[in-house]
Image (cartoon, rainbow, N blue to C red):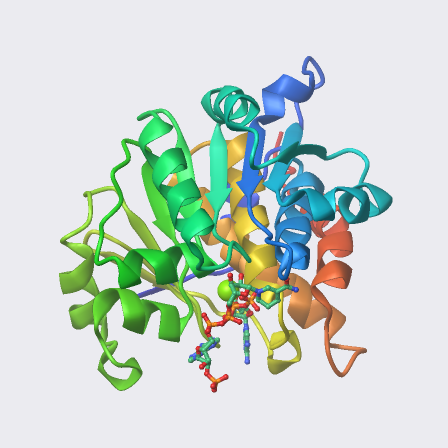
Length: 280
Ligand SMILES: NC(=O)C1=CN([C@@H]2O[C@H](COP(=O)(O)OP(=O)(O)OC[C@H]3O[C@@H](n4cnc5c(N)ncnc54)[C@H](OP(=O)(O)O)[C@@H]3O)[C@@H](O)[C@H]2O)[C@@H](O)CC1
Ligand SMILES: Nc1ncnc2c1ncn2[C@@H]1O[C@H](COP(=O)(O)OP(=O)(O)O)[C@@H](O)[C@H]1O
Ligand SMILES: [Mg+2]
């Protein structure tokens, strides 16, 4: 198991080319946030925005529109009942997040089944939260051509893999992942999060208990999406995102007893500036 260090940030986070425009930095679509869990969609989309994605859209329950725009008017909003607008936005996105606060009702399952098959090989989809629980309930490996990144916490991985938490060893996790398409990345979240792809296994070295508060994983999905939208290569971008997320939490916890996801999100542009590659 390889340990992730701050070097991953320097190798992934490049200075922005001056000859550029918003399209240069990628399009992220977040499909998340039911009427009950609206905050999850807002946190994920806000994290993608502040990680630097060029264009970010949230597809969510319409009750969440005003709350989103009161925080971040930069983020576009789609009512997720609008099939045709959702389809148009899906095909033009580089990275799609689906699942934070999606809920597990019939509508959520149908939405998941509509979205995943529409994605192409050039796209990356980050599957989190309720979407993982739904896949586990329906015993399905998704029908999608997109590269998948799964971001379960240990109980979500239990549901999906049938491995009880004490049985989630490296070998057992790798065996389960073999049933998924070869490029699939597993981000198994915990105090020291583990990242798997085929025979590679990495372990995060940052993160503190002050981060153990609702919405912290929803936030991570947006950071991963923003990193991939800009820096492309999914595995290094995911490793950098996991490290950056926990580093931000750790930095804030130097002077705070607990860390809110919204505070962590606000800190991202500063940390990315600080840790970017300055060799050129
Ligand atoms: N503001 C919002 O909108 C928010 C919206 N959210 C959205 O809500 C949806 C449900 O997500 P969820 O994670 O809250 O609930 P669920 O899937 O039932 O799992 C919890 C169970 O797993 C267990 N558990 C074991 N190990 C664990 C571990 N390492 N980390 C975490 N849990 C662990 C845990 O054990 P226990 O607490 O009992 O010890 C408990 O039994 C999802 O879509 C999410 O995106 C949330 O993000 C909150 C903020
Ligand atoms: N004690 C801890 N130490 C380090 N990181 C933690 C700790 N508790 C939670 N985290 C991090 O917070 C996130 C929690 O994700 P998740 O349980 O999906 O949250 P939510 O669904 O509420 O957004 C993960 O990235 C996890 O690594
Ligand atoms: Mg979660």
